[in-house]
Image (tube, one colour):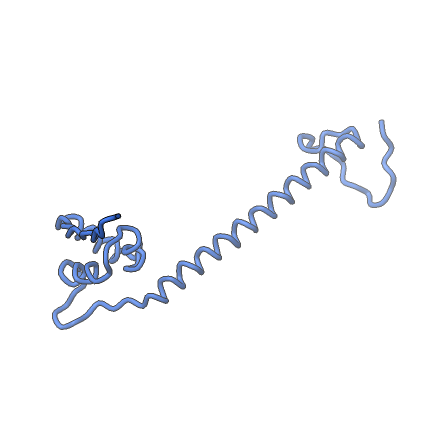
Length: 132
């Protein structure tokens, strides 16, 4: 029979330097309170109390209020923008590869080094060009 063992929560003690670093990360806009909470496994109550105690922006009689939805929404928008830009870069790379392949085929068909030959005569339109 297993003994009913209650897990004991040990109180964690953080250095003042660590607390100030958390506040600095928050004030820089690099992390929101919920992000810091998840990242360091610290309660948001503790983080808010550190902000109140160590923040350089604190004025007497004012409170720090963070809109959780706004920072989460901003992060989602930034991630969506990154994904969109990566897709654009991918499409551009495909286009570049296609055009380079097209140039290679044209060089083979025309027996002209298109990439390196700057004296290539301009096309006269739809006239058929004879191979050498």
